[in-house]
Length: 425
Image (cartoon, rainbow, N blue to C red; front, side, top):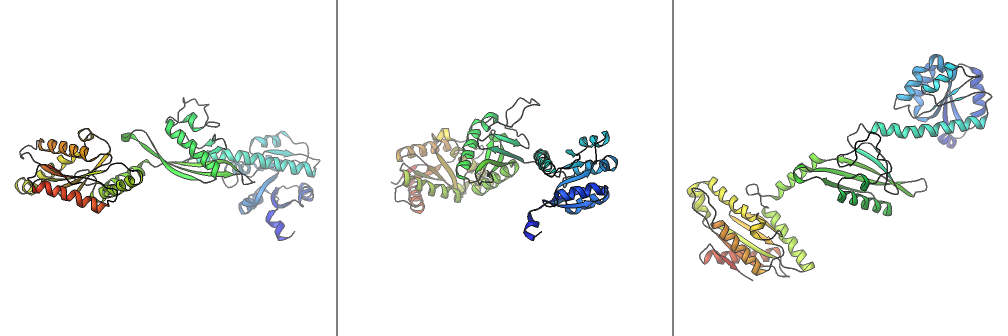
């Protein structure tokens, strides 16, 4: 037997005290199988321990199995290293009841004399195929211990199996209910995510390219987040025949990520965007405007004589005034649109980007903000005022040119008496 044959030949473990059986089986099968011999359960166990990764089938003397092999068969059936190896009993004659009983204790089949080469080979193939099928369910059972949901879909996007249910699944808790044969649209509570999942699946089946994404399930306060990883499954002819997927609950990780992102983008005192983030939004707004046209206006706001508040009433009072203005800049009803973003520019200066407002509308919004702030009650602190500069973005504007122009409009408002709105086109 050359080295190339050694790479592909299958191994059998034959355990028998009967030398006649061993010799006859060896004669019939040694041209197709590499046979490992053991003359006792103990010797067979040692062979199995050392060679289990290469053994395709165990042929076990049925009388030996009945007398001494129950623990051995139970171990092969239950231990993950061995559980995918089928056991076929080999009888020396008509099997007795004790030998036949072994079929309920881990053996899959029994061969009786007269022995025929092709018949034995076919029984071995059948046992391997049956054990492979059983192994699929054994693997599925073991994977259920993982917190992840591992699933398989066919080429019609229908589930073949899933290791566990998940919270956004819709069914009536019937113990006979199964996910097999169902699509996401059949089982998912959230139709929007179900449709998105189906589209993602179809794209994988079409292109052969895997994907990963995170979905949000539920309302903001109670939302859960799930990471979904999908890859195509191919048959032996390299044709895409399904999808294998992994679904992880990443709620805590995603909430932390979002908190960290919000902290990186947000002013800690006011809850508005910080300067870096509002600059980024202005830059993006200019890019969108140049690509798709439309209006973009910018309002810059400064609290009048703010230093006097800090010096006279303390920094806690100053913080209260800053947060009061921030509250107004978060009020989409007062501003009159949801298409805006506001940020703290620095100190007592704020910036408001209006994403679809012309100059006249921006001026009116600025005026509403000015009036609302001057009407705020800060308790022991006198009412405060703000000055506002307004400008409209031009197609050739950069962030620097736009911000410079709105700053000049604000300076004009301060210079001409404060507590007013000024425009520079």
